[in-house]
Image (cartoon, rainbow, N blue to C red):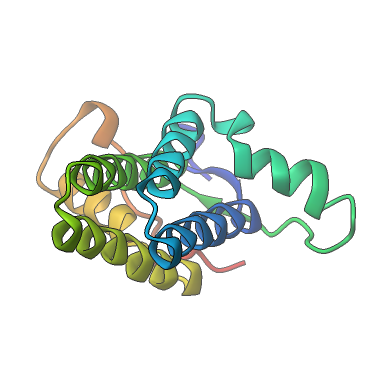
Length: 161
């Protein structure tokens, strides 16, 4: 394992975050409340800034795991790709919140559904935001995008155990 790129990542922590975001966005859609969407944008931001203390990360570690509902699913992965995907989620839900607040319901809810659908796809094992991160790496962007996908794993796919 290359210490500079690959790390141990709990995939159930990621899936919990994905599922909870989707549920929050669905609650916003069903109730037609932009505040639910804004709350998910804030959750994205907090998780980006404080990865170990994001609201749904804490829910996973402090509630779901102690209750025995979920266990660790540790895999070698690239956490920067997930942080980038969350940044895109933050951007889209932030824009959606703004649009919904200002009366642009069709566009706002369309963006919410984009996040819901892509979140479901990520929950099932392929992350479009992670894929984008690895494609930006292939374009030669350095800095934050310096990490390549794991050998033998399709870019954006959940790594094998």
